[in-house]
Image 1 (cartoon, helix red, strand yellow):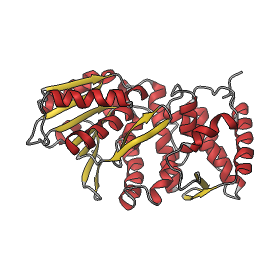
Image 2: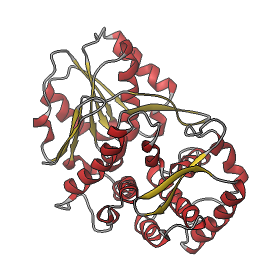
Image 3: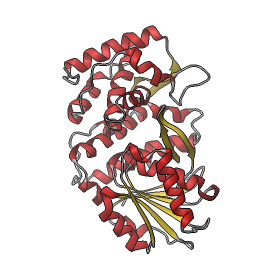
Image 4: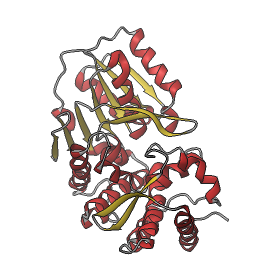
Length: 349
């Protein structure tokens, strides 16, 4: 069973495979369980294995990452008088691990938590690295804190309950890790399925890329910004569509745009690989969009430095830069991006 030991800034294990509940150490304090109602069966297994008396189920999705739901969970913990040595168990996809991690970061000024990611997106990205947070009406992930789990336990069996598209879209982040690390094996997503015998190893390989980067730069002051590849435009698309566009699909569209920026700056042409990713993913089509419509969302991006919006630009496999770009270049690439989408039949109308 693949196991990755994160060393810093806070040591914790990431375990991926079948039967991961046997690997969870027992806490001296009480447990509370926060879970996505879509995976109630697996949440019940966690509760029974660890003897959890306090359980709260929520509807998953971006609607869980609001100030209203956050307040509801805090009040639920407080009403039960749960002390500071409580361990919060978070079972669900990326929105639940983001929410649950932020609850743990702030309840009684910080309690420990364990993540049990149940989507491919949460396994390879959201549950790793200590980022927690909420959305505001003005933009995605504008509220949050760095709070590292005491452990991440990814049960591969839980991934078999995912709809096919949900399984695929989470692997966009793994593909992105392949671009960042220059690992061509991570670009080979087409043959993967929940039943694939090498799935746990593939996921662990993708996670290891993120772990290496976050150990070097845990608070996103340097190299960790590379993990935002495809996310600047992707988050704007999510916000513009009021989160009707799933995160993995938005990032895939953002990767296509980033590749166009890289090519315009003289980099390697990564478009063939990303076209293949989009054809395999078959994401929801985008409505007609104009640069001016997306610009307000781009300018709210949390990755701005001073007043400049910085873009992660791939110049080749494993070769990326983070830099501001002139608006003329951005708009020219946006027009080419729309042409690419039209050729791929990914625009409505």
